Amino acid sequence: MKKLFFVFLLPIFFGCKKESTNSADPVSSPPDNFYIKGTVNGVNVNWSSENTAGFKADPMDERLGILSNDCNNTFCKTLGLTTRIFTQPVVNAQTPSTLELVFTNAAKTEDFTTIRSWLDPGYRPFAACRCNMSDISRPIHDGILIYYTDENRRSWFSDIRIADQDGSSFESVELKNAAPDKPYQKIWTARFSCKLYSTVSCPPNVTYESIRITDAEIQIPVFPK
Image 1 (spheres, rainbow, N blue to C red):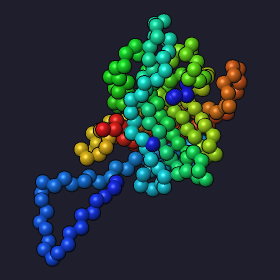
Image 2 (image 1 turned 90 degrees about the horizontal axis):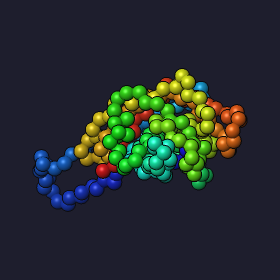
Image 3 (image 1 turned 90 degrees about the vertical axis):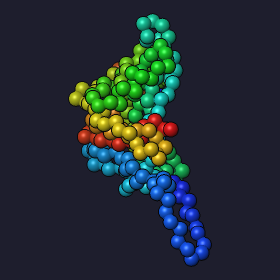
Image 4 (image 1 turned 135 degrees about the vertical axis):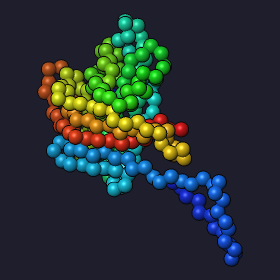
């Protein structure tokens, strides 16, 4: 399933008299550092909003996906929590390297309560795949999906058909409130290791090329205001 990252006003005062500061004026909180660090195919990476040009994390938000028929033989909706993280800047007007995280959940209603709880501390399963978004005959298996586009603009997926995630893990570590002046509600931290697969199509009985992400940790904003 392929479904499925400040402008400061500087008041200028003229004159010799120094204005007193109103203690009731709002004070901006320091910027949050969002990041991805770990090992991608044996190479250590540490991308962050503090040290990486072009790094940007779209706040994880609720998405309503296509219909699926794996809900007790009745049509249900695909609910998702989705974020896209731009890990490297655009080069020569091409798409930048990105990491996309998607929690997917098949449900009969548009109630995101259950899937929101998956951001709370605890281990989460990896989702199994449909080869593409139009393949609604193939059941959705709830869980986390990880998509990665590398520096060569090649895409890698955790959920390609028969993808093996033995030995992989995904742990939600912390979900905390953001400062009141931020444009997002929460800050989420997670750790994971997984295998990612790549192919130009999804035929059966083929061997997919793979890479590994190990000892990864992310911290990103969640739920825009």
